[in-house]
Image (cartoon, rainbow, N blue to C red; front, side, top):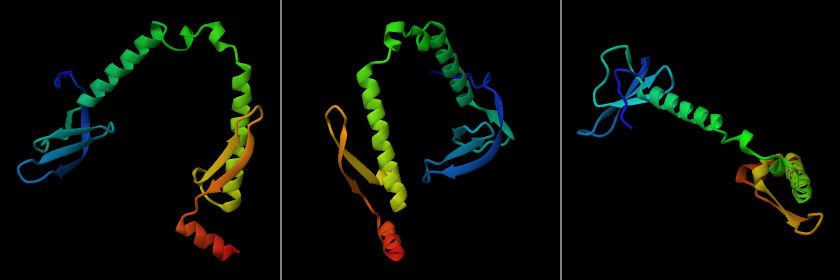
Length: 146
C-alpha cells in the first residue's frame, strides 16, 4: 500500500534516534502520536508527515465497514447464543480450578503461572494434584520465612 505523504497528517517530532552501522544508518523519528517514522536523514523541521496515522485510519475504516455489513455480534443467530449445558459445566469447573491455582499461589506468595493444577476428566473434573515451580528467589524467601 503506497501512502501519499503530502496528504498524511503532520506530527511534531519528539525524539530522533540514530541506529545502524556505517553505510546503513537510519534515523528513527518518534512522533507525538506515538508512531515512529524511519528516514535516511534526520528531519530538519519540527514536524513531519506520519504515514502510520494514515494506515491506522484506513484500518479503523475497514473494521467499521466489517461491523456495518454484519460481521460481528449482529451476525450471531439466536440459536448460537443459547448456552450449552456442557459448556456451563466445564466453565464453572475451570473457574474452580483457576481459583485453586490462585489460592495456592497466594499462600506461597508466587505468581499464579508457576502453579499447574491437574484434574481428572470426568463429570465433575476432580482435582488430582498440582505442581509448583519455585524460582531461586522464591526458595530463598520461603526458607527465610520458615
